[in-house]
Length: 128
Image (cartoon, rainbow, N blue to C red; front, side, top):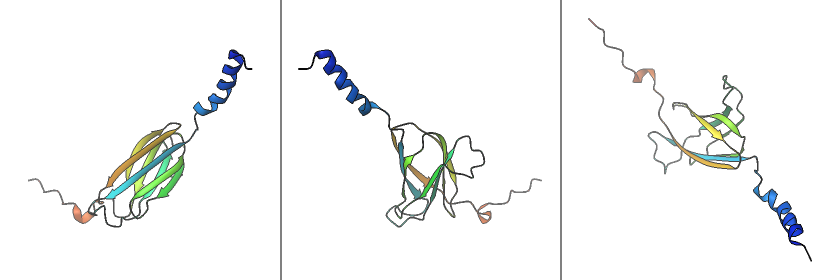
């Protein structure tokens, strides 16, 4: 028969891994496009996660693309401070700072607005 202290030590030994952090994060999201109904097939957006200290934004820590419904998943996502960049042809690119801690599960819905073209801009009125 187990003594109380032995039994407690035995249970604690096997309970510790259950409370340990996994060291992983899950980040999912949905991208909507300005001017396109959410029930219609969506354009493909590029999803990139850059380390916050990477000022060049040339080498993403991880990346993916959206599916035909605008959904994406970064699984497993790296941990730490990042800049999430979402881009698609014809739409303005957005960059959002995100922090991904261990055992984090997050979801982000984003609206990409149409990119402004030169024909969209009006020349400034001349001042007299």
